[in-house]
Length: 443
Image 1 (cartoon, helix red, strand yellow):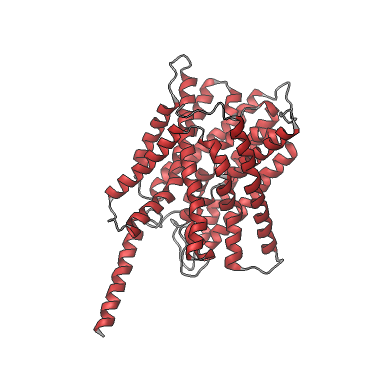
Image 2 (cartoon, rainbow, N blue to C red):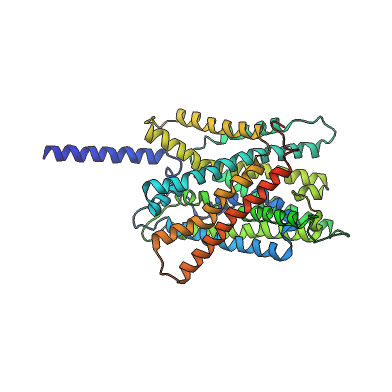
């Protein structure tokens, strides 16, 4: 009897310790988010500065394939995002708060971890490094536009200036605490997208506009097509943080979290369409194959508007960096506290998060062309986590009847996602090889 009481006390103490850790970790510490929090978190996570390169991608795809791929990517990723939202509470009374927890439930304790975590880390850490470079470049463009006669300042210094904001913001404890930053970022993404297509309309259709493929050879056209395919497909990659965002929403048996989360996702996808489709289609329509890989460069004037748009990009990527960093902080802090038995405290958080920000800043400064590399390496991680990993988990968990609508829809997504994994990195690798002479470390 005494042994049973002691065993029960130990179990209760262990549960209490686990609850205290969960209450400290960034993903599970706050569960009082409203549905609209998920809207601007998802907008901030998905709408990247890459939206400004969509007209350029369209020029390599052409009208027919370009429009089809834009719409198909939007539909497929909305479908796989709906699956993620549904699977968050696929087991009654249990919440899968993290992508890898759902992976472990679908594929097994060890295999699920090995399938999901490496891909999730490639995407999240990779995107954060790219945003370091993007933030630095946008600050540099702002400086050069506002003060064209000033001395040139190296990109490295602008990356450091951009990183300084993250040494402060990264110590906000959880998703709900960065909601104001995320809201500002979401507003900015809609603002600079609007500037891009509205300024294009103001400039008018160019007199010598040409919609033919710009490459002089058929092989060049083919490889440009593959690169553009990757650019468009990866523009919708926000699935890596969706379960972590849903974890912040309260849930009861009567009102599960999937209801407010899905409402937020639908509104986010409408905003996403308002950002992507006008920029891609109007930019291509007005400039044709002469459009630059950043439409703001093509627009050039008015200078004040381009400067404002670049500053909007800076504010947006500050928020996006934090959204993608939060699950990494959660993994880092979980490992330190649960595996290495560190005491949960502010000092631990201060050191670990500062080291992460310093790491992403250092890589961004060393390899300012990291975005080109991510197109290649990211192809192996973006496509699975966004296009077919949710479908594979859905088939493993729900086991829909063979040749039912659900079974067919999932297998179509898996096949298209697998093709993307094969084709997109080929285009990205060719782009790296062609631009290798101009790529410089520490530029």
